[in-house]
Length: 75
Image (cartoon, rainbow, N blue to C red; front, side, top):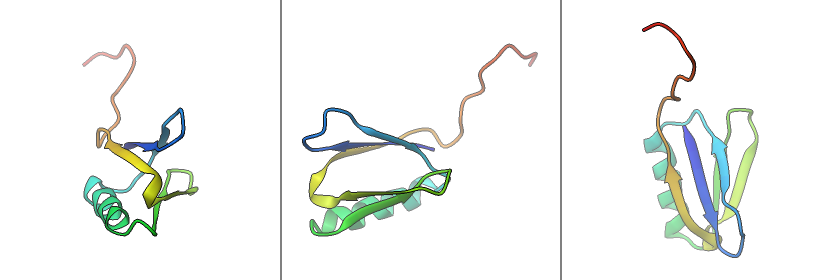
């Protein structure tokens, strides 16, 4: 699933692909937003950890669960 994170004061958003379920990501974001001194921590598909201070979060956008198929294949 694609996750876009807007960070206050940053001109570009963070974009990552994660294998976590949408409900799990939502729970992590809500927990981080509840405590402004905490960190939002997500893991991407390559195993990298992304840490964002909760007080710097502008928005979090969750994308599609499954990736779209691209190409010219017979259906």
